[in-house]
Length: 452
Length: 91
Image (cartoon, each protein chain N blue to C red):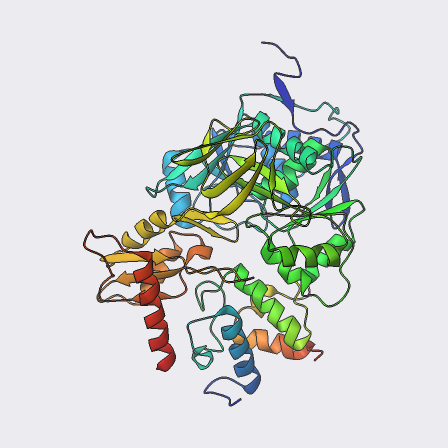
């Protein structure tokens, strides 16, 4: 087998052992230290083809990811860690276990805590390389049938997406960059724009995922420059309401939903940095970027191509595995630029978590005692996260019982607010439920409640 | 603002702010001050918690932080959140 650089892709791009690869509150972690931790921890992994990495700490997640790659194990990335999801994964992947840290949720699977026991003196600085075709991760998205659809991600594709992002955003020539993310490492955007961008760009990510705006500012202010904040519209809006001065950053990145022009302008002004956005999806990975203050069009990443037919828009090329049908309405401007015109009717996207109405309806109807049920996406509200509404025909069951059932089956972001118990759903002659009829029903129920 | 059964005046005010900010389908007075706000209680998730942090910062000048106190305890109930806000308010 050939061992040329082209056939194998390195775990990280840092050329110097002392170069920082991560930051913690206690200071930087060098590329050499990371390598030593990965090699030491790899010996501790149980034998299994697959692993579920539920670490909340980004450094622990990255050590687990590297160790799994060394052992040839695939990191499973489901859309959530709800009990029903984990149960279904466990049935399909019999020896599945979890990699955990102190912040991990409890699951029913055997747990292997990530340890940091690397010994620098006994670990030569030789960066491991993995075969192009080695599967590093399997991402799951909820398909329209309710059964999660797996997408295998070779290490070469993940690595290339990290490098494409650095190039697309103009970071390629930067000697260093400190990256702070507010999104979990398990989310495809979080994985790509914090861990993979750092590993493949030769940069460093912060191990923490601060949540409250005040915490984001504290952690950000302690990072060396140039520094970058990788976040979402929800967090940007929260940060921009802080009255005190915000810490200066050099780059801002947002994804999960397109930013309103006004919020982008405010964020650029408050942080004193250009704000770029990433467009992509779990199946295809990141596809394009834009700076909305400069132009509303999205520019495709290197080698990524789009094609349209009667079913919609397909992405391929570059790091995209095969050809992926996108769930958004897209207008092509030229061969490398496009405009986004919202999602297709069935797609649900709440704060970066995606599913389909068909999948949610199936989950609702699978709950014992529910005779009929349907979800509704209300109209978008400016500047606010839209919440789902659900209707259920379930004689003898309370809304609380049905919500409890849903919470074990779907991500908390999709739990309806509110869930209405009704006598019948407004099905038309063909048995379909027109969205307009559900919107009208929701409005009637809301008025009735307010008048009570 | 009148205090309802079980809620202090400060708790009713905070309950009203939360219901308004989160667009909840529950009357402020119906929130049990001792019941959990997160997940199984009022059913709030992290997006809601961020929204509450905004309201609390705007109204009372309190910046919620993850490490200045135990968040699980602060968001344990309307009562504990209200106590935290009253202790740290600057406006």
